[in-house]
Image 1: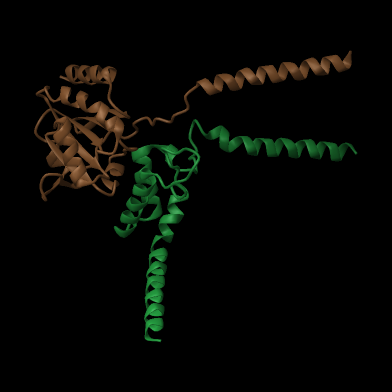
Image 2: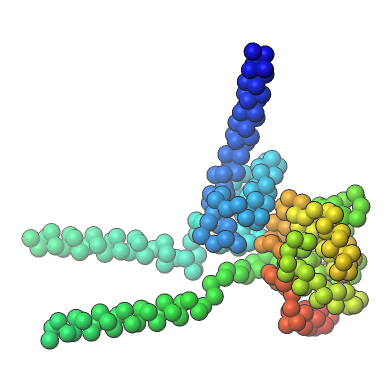
Length: 120
Length: 177
């Protein structure tokens, strides 16, 4: 009986330890999901188990512990690895088409529909 | 006749797209970043491989005109290949070579140096890989050439050094003065 209780207590401790760890890294998960793993293209840093991604996650945790906010961490990584590391592209000369094209298509489609409706 | 034209059009389209895709296959699609910040981060702090002291990057690169930071590991095969090129660079007296031992076992790292020779003036360790990320590195091996006076990155090689890169490095060092 004593052994049973002991085992239960140990499991409880392990479980609660994991939980506290998980809560701590939730923020890391959130940030790393928005980062492209540069050496394993097609995966995010969050998904990847490569050395690069693992180190990146530790770095993000360190930065959070230092009291940096999300924006500062993204900016830091952008300054090191370039715009490509974040999934969300900024609006600049090379990406303006990417952002504007859907809008243009939407408006164009709208005009087409309006014309068809008004002809009827 | 109409049917024929449709068939020809489809076959034509397939052939065209085949060649477009074939061309796409031959194009290497590796992303290599433009250096949009050539400044080096001095927040970097690391422990030496051969002693328990710590040092900042600032202290490490300060004594000569140029520094090479080489990220390596004993488990990395290409590092073995490029080691002779680093030993070759050691003879340049305007240059010091700093090794960053990336995610390595200390005993293996020391064995690697003992076996292949030591091109580095100083070696620091990076057991978690965080320091390498702070430097903007991708993995091992990686080589960064720094101008110590202006504190800027002159050149960065991802992957092992070879004859061509070695010549290029020497050219840059020669032309900078």
